Amino acid sequence: MCAICGCSGTVDAGHVSDEDAHQHQPGHGHEPGPEHEHEHVHADGSVTRHRHSHSLLTRRTIEVERDLLADNDAVATDNRRQFAAMRTLVLNLMSSPGSGKTTLLEQTLLRLRRDVPMPVAVIEGDQQTSLDAERIRKTGVPAVQVNTGKACHLDALMVKRALTELPPLRDGLLLIENVGNLVCPAGFDLGEQRRVVIASVTEGEDKPLKYPGMFAHADLVVVSKIDLLPYLDFDGDRFARYAEQVRPGVELLWLSARTGDGMAAWLAWLRQQRSSLG
Amino acid sequence: MHELAVAQRLVAMIVEEAVRSQAHKIERVRLRLGHLSHVEPSSLELSFAAASRGTLADGAELQIERTSGAARCLLCGAQTVVARHGAACSACGECALLVEGGEELRLVSLEVS
Image (cartoon, rainbow over all chains, first blue to last red; front, side, top):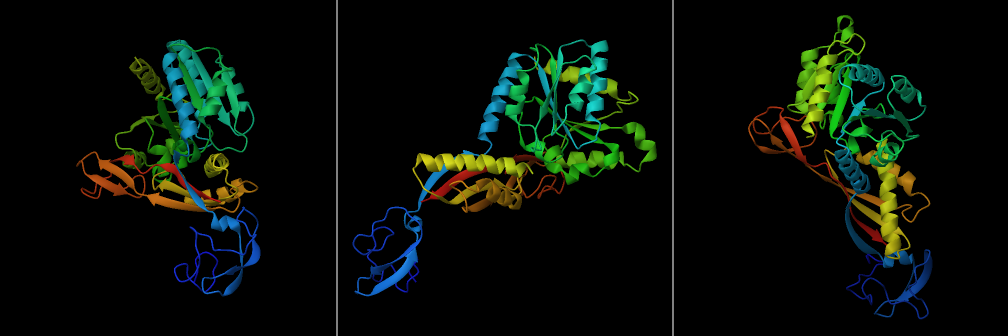
């Protein structure tokens, strides 16, 4: 069967083929057009009536080889350069909804102000509302709310725009609270220097295995709400083993923002990361 | 559903390429998608169909070539092929693999008319 029009002949055995077109009746040009019907003559003189669309006859390939997230990555690289110029530590905090990210941030900001004063700002990502940014501002720290609308993650451009709404930061700390979601935010580089994944003990110990894409690139895993451990069957060793399986060598910090347990180690980690920026 | 964001980006890229080469329709799109990338092929296909509606790519066929994940074992040093994060090393059986490849998400080519 002819691969071009589906008639019973073959291109080799009788079609007059210039590249991929038959020889058509005079006056039948090959401008692109909708599917239509017409006759064409084979080399043996037989006439076939068939339907075809010209698009089929004039297909061509365009080689592209471009990364689909190239645009986001370019903006993220730009952000990273800007953060370096600001000598500011930038963290991308990711977790499922309800892990206690905002409470951890509030408590972190209050303690930082008391113990390690430095310029701090927060970018809050949520699909809707500015509730989180309002909570952060109550601690006295400037915060910008980014509403992603339908989107399930922050991207580098949202962060770049949010930056322009914040007072200039230098030698400080910028905390980006991503949209609560253990899947999508993992795929979008924001230009951050460190990725922190927060998992609360109420979520169970199998989260690293269930959402490996999120844990696979974490620089730190914070296990939150440990004050609830007495009421749960959460197996901490298993959680640690699973996290290690997905991200070998990852550091784990156990804390409760509510009781303050483990907060000193978290603040020490922040200070250490900030001084490692040089 | 970050696949929708990826699909929208894909449609923008291929329409741009097609317009540049004065094509009238995008017939087929070839992607290379690593097994360890954060994109689910079936979800991407669905999102692509929605995102391409009414554009030059409306009705285009999406061909997805999967590439395997590459990792190195931090314990025994073996290079190994993995299909998912958190897999065990094929040489020593331990789960201490550092992912080194297979996360790509690339537009390879498109067929236009």
